[in-house]
Amino acid sequence: MKRNEKCLEDPETDLFNPNVLKQLSLPQTDGLSIRPLKSEDYDRGFLQLLAQLTEVGNVSREQFLSRFHMMKNAGNYYVIIIEDVNDEKLVATATLIVEQKFIHNCAVYIVEPLSIRAKTLLQRGRLEDVVVNSEYRGKHLGKLAVKIILELSRYLGCYKLTLDCKDRLIPFYESLGFKREPNNANYLNMRFPAIAEQSHL
Ligand code: 16G
Image (cartoon, rainbow, N blue to C red):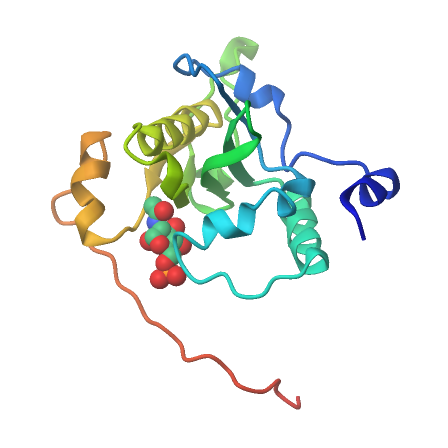
């Protein structure tokens, strides 16, 4: 199905409210737009951009849209896109996931006495899937993508933002303020082998 036909049927939609990004104090970005992931980014090469980070596999439009709407309905996935406005190329992406937790008062904003609403920092953010298109590297766009997520995390009330990354990227993230906390700088991983066949259960 052609993109125009698809648009008539199912209007393009944002993963999250774009006004949230307008609330942030972000640096001037001439020629670039900063926006949420959109449902039609499948056709703009979003998955090819992600494939510059890790294996993406063969994801059909239906699979992409199904996952997109699942994330949109969950309401705690913030995939941001930096786009070159001149040629509509996707330049970079990064994702903030705001975790739902029971700890820290179920991560709800506390209402202080005298009806003053204090925005208490209670939610945990996770920074994921940061990629800059190889054609645009060397322009500090990775830093820009991470800074957007930092601002977004603060705005959404995160008390901390965590990430895991390749060892060679640790200095990059440290330069943006991330720290290996004493006694807490560990990241453990367990990789599960792919399941060849569906379970018959
Ligand atoms: C990096 C990414 C992580 C991504 C993973 C993919 C950042 C900060 N970290 O660790 O989000 O999911 O690479 O690698 O972008 P994998 O396919 O080996 O899990």
